[in-house]
Image (cartoon, rainbow, N blue to C red; front, top):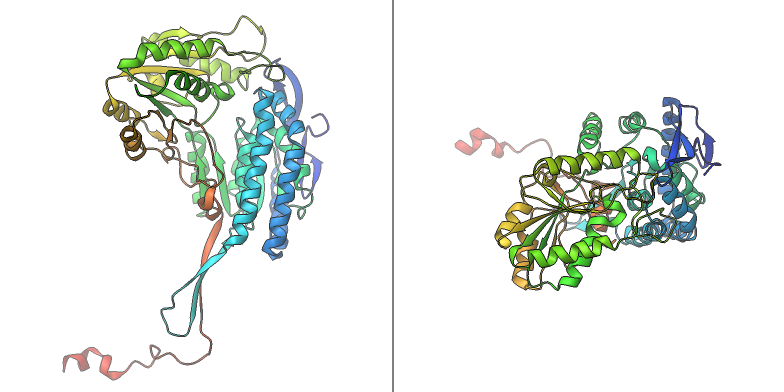
Length: 495
């Protein structure tokens, strides 16, 4: 981490940054672990020029050669997962098991897109003119700007980079200030690709905006807050750049009487508190049928109290929040909920141990749907639980949100599952299987969550443009050309 601190990854090599320097801190100890530098406008220009040059080389290769290179990326990501996992845990705190998992999950996306991209590069259409060939070609956008958050930097960069590179693009990533070193540590997995094809520029929002607004970048993939997404989309719109946006979630979790209690309680605990609740698809609003409400709440509390809290490099289930600022924000959310009448069932405070760091106990609240905490993204270890009379009320309240990323329901009644799938307004619905992903299935949301899709065939098309091509086998006059027959004139028609 010390070796790559203060560096960018430009044109195939680590280069010391020229901009302002900032320390990064281990949220478990609040001790410095490294530093990053704000990229300058000159560094942005250099990265964009290198990316566009490399993209031409990359696109000139055969689809088979690109696929082979992407499989090699996947192999190297798995080989480096222990190193990048340790770096990620030291930078943002999540348990090492989760950090190490990200390398393999990212590699899986590269393997999927390596094959998908060479399977299809367009289609042949039935010609509108006899004897001609009419087709659609799929071509890369050019240079993609990737802006990834701190919560899953390896995974989310992998999703975006795999799709972008497979489609034939170059990519420049601007990581979160909290996990810059983690993303930089990934770069040896890409050093067999054309220099400049994959680059990292560190820094704050101004660096991201400079990349998004640059005349010679061609598409954007962004994950972050609604406010930041709006700023990115506004800048990209000045040049009509396509933008993939995933901007926050506030996912409901519905529990019906037919579901087995043990599975539900364990699933709820995982859905609420994975990565200390810092997951865009975390379960953040629990709607529990009144007939099993008390029984579920007791089991949920029991599972939550059993979670081990501590440094993510130790044998724990829950690490710290990503920063002291994030911990303080969550404390304010809980305090406001209590002020509005919420009851703290368990948690709601900093743990007695560890005594330092950005730790906060996994917290279960009993709330009403009208409490503020049910209408925005908590992005922390908070599980607000609300009693509902039936599935109709649960779905109605689940849809009462400006966000629409994911939704969960636990039920073993098929009719209830079908209703949830078709009636909940979200991009994802999990029935009895919370928070799972599949490289072959598109990931994304509705409403203010954003637009576009990662993963699946849709994720590949996110980074491609379509070109209409018509080919006539001979150059010969067309009967539709000039001069027009006199008989087709208005006067001739009217005579």
